[in-house]
View 1: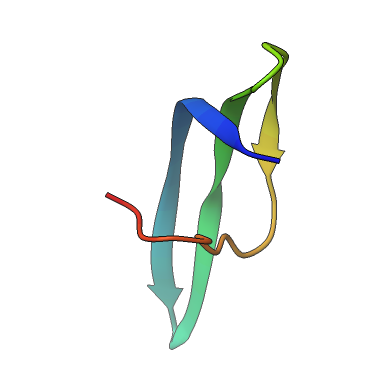
View 2: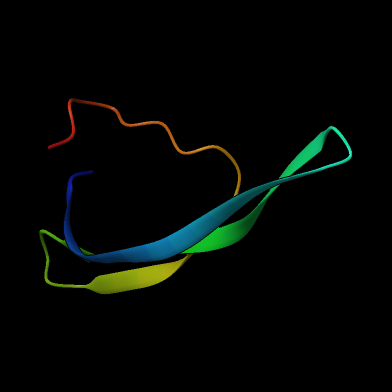
Length: 54
């Protein structure tokens, strides 16, 4: 279903040491459903938008 984003926060740090790159960080989200329920948590793995993001 569709959800409204109530909050979205996080940070990522890209670093490169001796030619090897790495990315550390995290992203958390809080969503509201059409029925008023609120869910949230940490986001893992790649994040892909289903529609244009502003």
